[in-house]
Length: 332
Ligand code: LMR
Image (tube, rainbow, N blue to C red):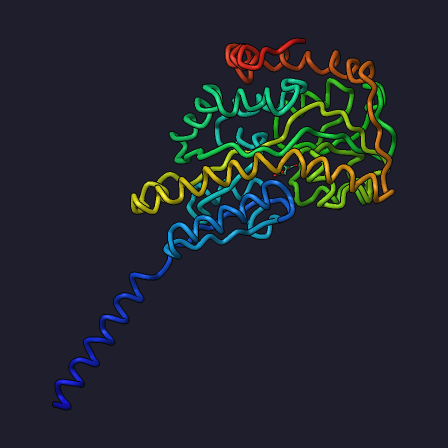
C-alpha cells in the first residue's frame, strides 16, 4: 500500500515537472529607443498586454524602452542576430538593413497629413516595402504612426535662411541629410539616446522630431525655440526576426498577429492626440517658445525643400516616388 502511494506520488511529481517544463513561456524581447509615454512606447506595452492575454501566458513579451538594451544601430544588428526578436525602428533607419526605399517617408512635405500617409502605409507601396525586408531575414508586421516634425534650436527658425550654418541632428537617412543641406544647415547623424546631451552641450545646435519625442526626452528644456513646421513625417515599421517568427507554433503566431493588428490600431489612434498634447505641454512649460508658421512662411520652406524629391529620386527610385504621388494625390 505504502509502495503504491509512493509510486503515485512519484508519477504525480514527474507529471508536474514535465508540465512545468512545457509551460516555460516563449520570450519575445521587444527593444525600442523612445520613452514609454510616447505613441510607440504605449503601443509596445499594449502589444505586450494583448499578446500575453491571448496566448494565455504561453508568450511573455519583455519590452525594453529608451535604448535600455540597444541604441539605434545596435538594435538592428541584434535583431538580425536574434538577440532581440521585435523592434519598431523609425522608417528613417532602414537603409543600413539594405532597404533604403523606406527613406521615401523622410521626403519633406510628401504627406499633407495622416490621411495621405495612410494611403501609403495601408496601401500597395507600404506592402511592397515590407516585402523587401524578407530577403534580409526580417518580416515587417505593421506600420505604427508617430507624427509630423517640428524643428528646434536656440534661435528662431522661421525662414530657410535661418538654417544657414546650423548644426542639426538627424537620423541616419540620406534624405534627411539632403533636406538639411537644402536648408543650408550642416546635418549630423546621431543616435536618438544621445540627442538631449548633444543639444545641452552645444555639440549640435538643433534638431527635428515630432513633439512626442521632443517633449518626452525633455529636449525643449535645452532648446529656446520650437518651430511648428510639420515639414516631414516620422513613423515606424514593426519588424521581427523571420526565423524566430516562423518557428513559433502556428496557433501562437495567429494569436500574436491578432494582438499586433489591435496594437497597430491602438498606436495609430493615439499618435495624433499624443503629439498635440505634448506640443501643448511644451508650450505650457514656458521653457521654449513655439513659432507657428504662417501659410506663406510654410510655403517658402516647401519651395526650398520639395526639390529634395527630385534631387534624391536616384536613391528612392523615381517610379516609387511617382507611385506615392499617385496614391496621395500629391501637389507641389
Ligand atoms: C529618432 O531617432 O529621432 C527617432 O527615430 C526616435 C524614434 O524611434 O522615434
